[in-house]
Image (cartoon, rainbow, N blue to C red):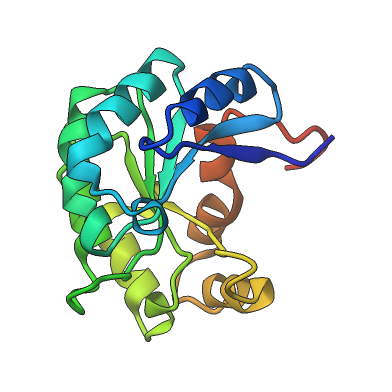
Amino acid sequence: DGLRQWVIIDPKRPETFDQAQQMLSKSHCVGIKIHPEEHLYPIVEHGQAIFEFAAKHEAVVLTHSGQENSMPEDFVPFANDHPNVKLILAHIGCSCDEDLSHQVRAVQMSKHGNIFADTSSASNILPGVIEWAVSEIGAEKVLFGTDSPLYDVPMQRARINEADLNDHEKQIILRDNALKLLDLKLEGYV
């Protein structure tokens, strides 16, 4: 009962929108996952259709970000045009140009506060990246992510545990943001 899932949309395959519509009606489906790099499409060409669909279904969108087809700043106009769509830019520090700031800067460009970033990236194992992101956008805009099975979950968790952040910031990143963003309830937990 505690397992949740994302439904994948590939805008070049219209049937994935039909599948997403069906899955989003189920309580265990928390939102839409897109991956412009794996599905080989530029978000600038397909973002409008994805975000219109997400807005219609009031769905959270989680996306790979930081490479040619998925630069974080390219998502900002779609998120700004659809304030009811919450967007999670995966992979703080992931970048095709070695600039670790793209996801954080995109969060800062949000007009409605509906853009977030997650920690699932090999790039942010560099010293101070998580702390820098929190100092720039606040713990409330950073979500814990693992990118499992690509990366080892305990290693990803250790980055947060060992970060130079206070316990409250760590709890916000590790749990509270996801509960709020995905409208999840954990009965019996503090």
